[in-house]
Image (cartoon, rainbow over all chains, first blue to last red; front, side, top):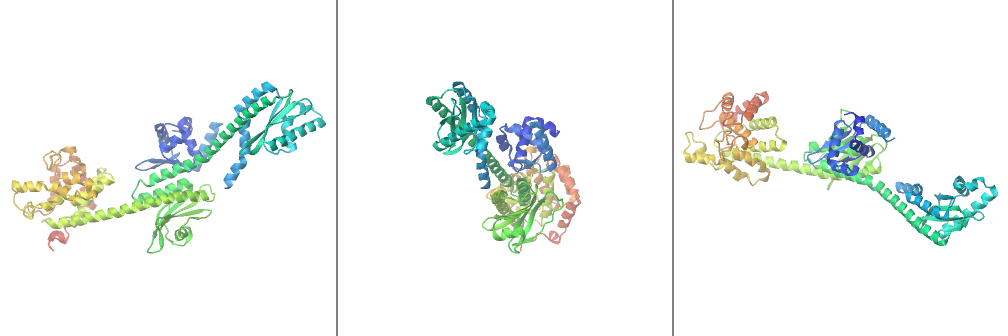
Length: 88
Length: 518
């Protein structure tokens, strides 16, 4: 899925915004669902979509998966532009 | 500390920003405006405004003063200025006369007895009753307190939320690193997570080699370079060495070395070069110290687990050797059969725990034969019914002997059922097809193959190819056809075949058991 298309989805945008504002964060689907006040399962689906697009990094372990923000500075700059464009 | 004072200095500005936009204050203005009809309201956002500041605030809004002569304007300012002083001193609502026949009042905005500014109204054509002013005072007090509470809550949220997110991150990291007991997996994981939460480019984890007084590189992750050099560091040298020597973090502009401290220092995590080219901060140091505390627990657990595993496998090998000395037939090429069993297990996509069970089972599957008399095991002629019953009991006897070793719990089903046949004609339970555990189905093939190519008093030793042919012939009846297919595929591997042939032709293999009757 294209990044712009992805950010049109409310839940994907909220997840991206959370990580964009908290770039050092690593959290579980449950944690992120709490921070953005959304349903855990919907958040989990969005997280997996974003991990597939390499916007997020999935740290998989047997008991849980932690998600963190991409370290690709070009991608972060692009997301920044899109988020600003959207909010303006 | 710096952050705190900066926040405090922002407080009045934020408070007045909120007051300006407060719906309750606007409603109050509307409501009292209807009663007293003032021509202007104003909000002064500092406790001691200078005259020119006051001029600016009032001139911008007062329709009268815009047109008034300089003398009148000055007189008006003086009245307001004096009223402000009075309100500041008394810390209570103060009335004044702004210009002839017109009235005004000033309400001081206080918080914890500290004056922050004023709300005022002027150009009121009729005198305002004290009762009405009391009501205004009480109402404004409530509104200001409400806004102050809102601001406090928002500040609390702004302070607590990042910390809560950081705490949640630390908790997630702990869960991620404590979910593995494999050091080879754990250390790179700690390195990657450290890079992520500090946003650095390189992380190196070194563990102390106490004998040589050096730090051994165990995991290095560099996000810029593909090639990573693993360097030993002497304790006391460079940032990692110093962190270990002094047992405290060593922070520079582009590095942060955090010691891993248990009872003693066991290693160090060193981060280099932040992504944003900024220097490492005390906050980074704090976060890394917390992460290091968690990493130490995970590393110690993994080391203990490895040690325990080494002890277990050592004990199992010793037990297997003791059992081998008890069996009356010659040397068994254990290493080859172990390799074959694991190769078949891997091909059948068994996970690491299942493979471990298979490994242990291949060493111990015939442990129960220890209770079968030598005369029966080495009998060259056909067994009597009673003797055969004794042999059939050996899987159960094996389980009885080994059940006290908790580490072997998952191995028991394999030992118990490795003589079951795919068509249900085996022993001890007569299980068939998938009722038989996969490990036992694999062990059945390996065990039969082992017996056929090994020297047995009751049968002629077969060659490898003859044994493979026999296994193929019994596929689907005695053995699981899937396991047989994979076993035959594995046996085509040159490395396995060579290893098995070499072991079979070793001198002690031809001579018989190695340690048996010494």
